[in-house]
Length: 323
Image (tube, rainbow, N blue to C red; front, side, top):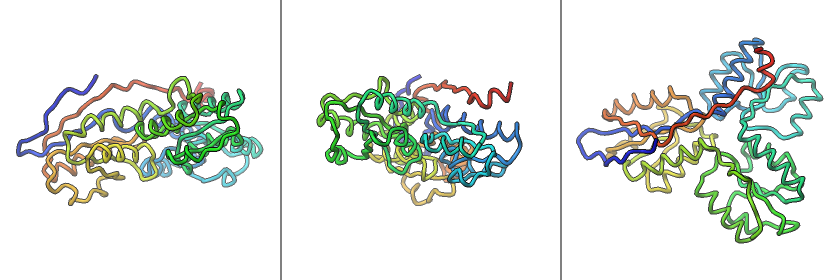
């Protein structure tokens, strides 16, 4: 259901606007469940390539449960069990897993898999692929690895201006799933100006959770003095929420947890909005709210932009074992 109209809090009581949806998306829930179920089924150790999701608290909790996080597969003993993170991997990583006889469970988010399949299809049809994203992000590295000889990464409008493509009439674009809607729109607009025949996927790649959380920040921006986003520094979608808040005139900060909040940020603040990136656990949000209450923010209103009911099934590798 959409946000109901509400007025800026002008009373003596300081107020928290708690945004919803926030926190875990369906892909993150699935990825975390994959690790937990694998540990329950097979026992530790279970190896995980990269962080299963980009959140320090989640990774630390799973590590304590017996998951071993590695950067690359050569750190995994031959024949052992390993999990691919929610961000996806390039085909070269899958080949390495087969060569080393690893028992792989693929926790790639289905929405990321969708982008990979689109890249393969566009390349097969003879198009150059412009990928809008951040070059060092795990998701982008995996997507570029699908068809590296046909893929071109752009991060800014200026990058679009520097593109030199083999055939300007045969171009398709894709995007990282966790980008800012507004920033991506600017880049795509410039792409269409430079390459009038360019087309994107049938349905946009920026995921539903990223969109919903950004739209909630926009909806509350004119009513709050401060925005606190719970999420890790390497979480792309969390950082985009901070950017959206800043762009809409709200002083905005990304905090890993309540300990990152500087009390000086709260001086003169009457209304604070709180949200969380798609890989941030809810208990961190509740701990932050308790912290804010200690600084006089005793009123709270939860504002729901839209109800999320997306669910993803577990990977086939796990389903077979469970059955």
